[in-house]
Length: 105
Image: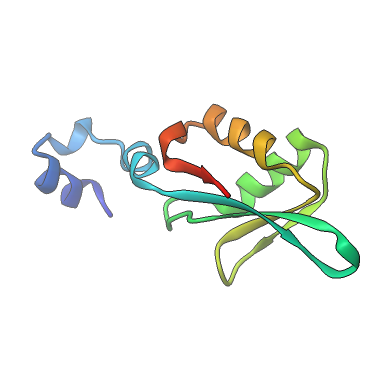
C-alpha cells in the first residue's frame, strides 16, 4: 500500500505518513513451533506483508538469537532451528512490531 492510498484511508497528508511504520501496525505475525525429522524443533514465524524485508530480518534475527535458520521465499516466513518462540517475539517487539499483533502458538 502506498502513501497516497493510506492518505485516502486515514485522512492525513501524504508527507506525514510512513507506509512501513503503518503497515507494521497492521501486520499479524504468527510464531509457532513444529517438530521436524528426528524430533528436532523448528520455530516458524509467518504473516509478514510485502513491505517488510523478511530476508534481511531473518539474517538479523539469526545473528541476535545465535541460531541457524532460513528464509522461505514461497511463504515469506522465517524458520529458526530450535525453540526460540519467546526470544523471537521479544526481538520482533524491539524491531518495532506491536506486541498485541504477535501471536505465539
